[in-house]
Image (cartoon, rainbow, N blue to C red; front, side, top):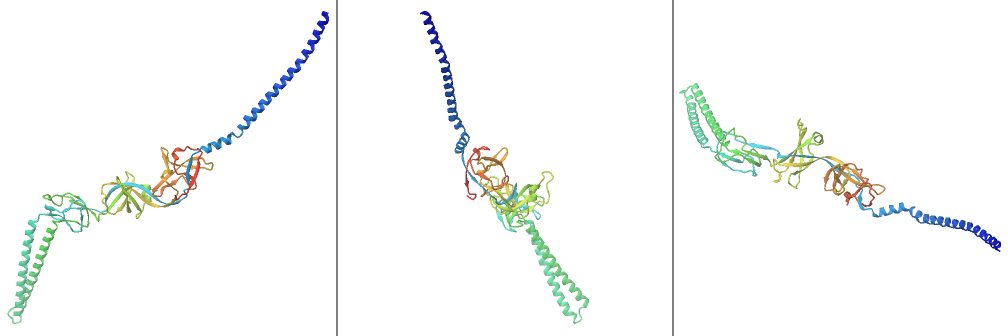
Amino acid sequence: MNYETSFRSDETATPIDGDSAPRRRRALIIGAVVIALAVALAFFMFGRKSEPAGPVAAQGAKAQAPEVTVVTPGRQPVAGTVSATGTMAARVDMPVGVAGEGGEVTRVLVQPGDWVRAGQVLATIERSVQAQQSAALQAQINVARANARLAEQELARAQQLVGRGFISKADVDRKLATRDQANAQVRVAEAQYRESLARTGRLDIRAPAAGLVLTRAVEPGQVVGAGSGALFRLAKGGEMELRAQLSETDLAKVHVGATATVTPVGSAESFHGQVWQVAPVIDPQSRQGIARIALSYDPALRPGGFAQAEIVTGQTDAPVLPESAVLSDPSGNFVYIVDANDKAQRRAVKTGQVSAKGIAIVSGLTGNERVVLSAGAFLNPGQAVKPHRQAAGR
């Protein structure tokens, strides 16, 4: 009884152990399938999303790119210029001093800033002595004329008597010579008198030409003479000039007749002039030469003042940009251009003349680039932007 029970127990245990192995295999297979499905699902979900990440990110970055206004400047005629600085002066500076004997100044008739005409009296000198000398010479003229009349009368009487034989021909000749001598003495006395008047007239200090009185260095009561120096300085016709200092290279570009714009220091007003003389020599110390720019009179142009000049040396074709498009830093001037990939790129440029049209770009641009008009200071090289084109003429 016990044997059978034991046999059945063993017989039952054997099939139970035999069924557990397939179940474990099925569990492993099911687990592997679940894991594979999970991996596939994860690949499907994350792998598919990672594939378009680049284009989507690029589109997002492009959507966030700043908008900039660009222009293609092209090329247009631009006047070539050179810049210079210099000192204002009278174009023809005339010092006026004592032309005669000199003496004590009695009156000064003009002040600096007055306009005078040619020959106008600027100052007078005391002339009492010269006046008495002139009066004496005038009296000598009267004496000489009286002697001339007497000689003429004696000659006439002698010519009447020579026909009657009372006077010889030799006596008549002597009377004729006496008459001629008396007439010559009259002319000498008159010449001496005119010389005296001229000397007296030279006591007046007169303007040699019409112009503007620049300085005055004499006062009433002052004793002046030939060694007193210039008592007045005049600008002939009021014409002024700028004596612009230029380097050898720039001086070679300037020619007589070139137009120029002159701006005095401290003034916002500019004046137009013309180069009338270019220095034939170069200063060996400074290596500079002088271009003299003629200017019409204006109260703002004062001799001795400092001024800047822009001299036109010719004409060339160059891109012209608004001032907002040209930036600068310690490295120099530059602009931002937008390349074919719509990315901002820094471009170094050299600027030229500044005018109402804008700034001429001498080098660095061909004129076909898309140049950022403004907000360039907020861009970085290589930064993506959204360009909006603007016409160059706006």
